[in-house]
Image 1 (cartoon, rainbow, N blue to C red):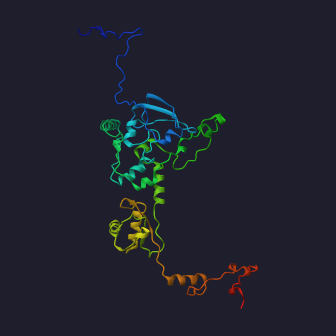
Image 2 (cartoon, one colour):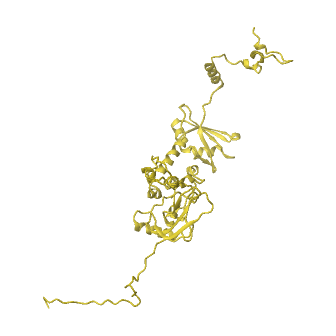
Image 3 (cartoon, rainbow, N blue to C red):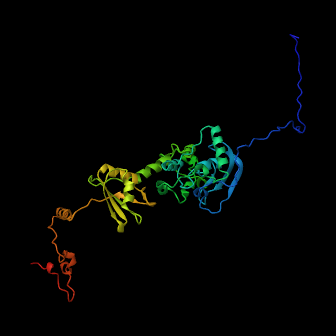
Length: 378
């Protein structure tokens, strides 16, 4: 009826077996779909350390991945005799997609940052593998990558088309254990560390610079990585062939030619840059000289082929040729530089220096040896 207060009593029917001593329990379990469980981490030789016997601590679903935010099995160990304790920071699914170490996020094949590796592999036609920034997109792509990699190589998500010459020159093939050293003590920087020699961290001030602000996500995605920028800048400076000051030089020297190399093989490599005046082969010395008509064309060819050119699967040394000097130019240059008369022709001419005559230095001649006539004053 309107205006009347009616009380309704609801009785909840709980399923049998859900009653405990302290009350009702939660019947549902944690949804672990997509969580990762592993038996051994994916690490590089540097992160493992110099000690061949490694003792690791393992915890299933111990931490979230810094990239995909999914729980995974964390591993912790001491990186070498003088190294610090290190642990995995990303899951194996993300590491396999980029083919990187779970701790340092460097490429497992070349030991370089992802940005450096992707830059030069893209020149060979390798498509860059990128993870979406949204969580749903990352989970979908990682799920597809895991499904595709079950019947193939674990690193099938990042197949390489070939070895770029630049990557082979920049590759870190030996471990760099300095990366495993202890971190700087923040209390020492503030002047408040009271541990002294017992402090496990380094007591020194940070150096700063361009490498002071490194971010883990930028290293993984290969974007705005200061270390990668430093490596690429140094590579460009070291691998740039500076042209000579003499503008008349338009010749490139090719050294280390393979056996059986023909002029046609060299012309096929250089005709794309411009008109070629001549190609001189020296098979006995395994070298050749390529002369261009224009200096600008020669500079472009030198920049594009220096330490990169390959002929018949062999790397060729490309440098600038030296200017050809005739005998008349050598004689005139010697006269201008020394201010002396021209050197007499003939096989009987032999230059005389006072140090060649012992008597000129105050020493007596040896028995049976006549003094040099040129040392006797006339």
